[in-house]
Length: 161
Length: 103
Image 1 (tube, helix red, strand yellow):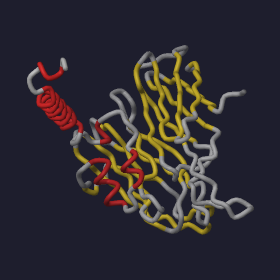
Image 2 (cartoon, one colour):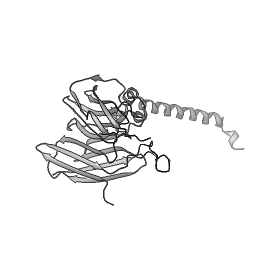
Image 3 (tube, rainbow over the protein chains, first blue to last red):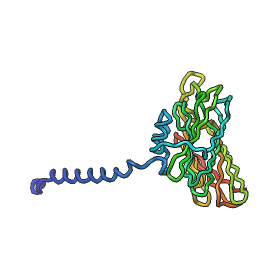
Image 4 (spheres, chains in turn red, yellow):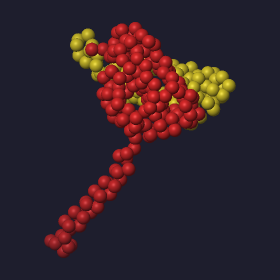
């Protein structure tokens, strides 16, 4: 019969519960607007997007403007879509990241490179392309996005199936 | 086991050029094997290059990066003999790390 001597034990528990829920709610809030490109985490969500526009939105949260200061180098015709050599260079200042999108791949975002201070804003790699499609390079410089595109003809697709 | 990462880092003046070649299947999860069963996706998600305790290049990759990936970049501020640390992690929790001296 000891419990009955304490006043309203359940009421106190409920209040405590409510308070901790409120705290958790507040704690989660600042995480929501954090953009994948701005922090150190792998941008899983952006890589899952199907279309190029959705992937750019998910990765950067803004749109890019075409710029002749971004140079995208890729073959006119790729015989093997499984291995297409692609390189991006730019003369822009304060570059923080370079990303590559293949419009007609099952998932448009192919690769995203973070360029810390002191690293030359240029990258070369090899990508898979499902079919003849538009290739887009996006350079993030001084908080803005600049893009270059190029059409690559693919004779044998590189995504299987 | 031999490392899955092959790196060449060469310095010229203030600029160090790094080339890396990694052995990895980079399966997309869309290709079927000879029995007609889908090969599950298996690809490197993050590749990180560090030099003198600082990130010099970080790559986030999807399945569209070719099998046995290759990447090339350059950075400033290192000299001959400095060590570069290269590490990757894939979507199945696999990882590998190696170091290379700048030549």
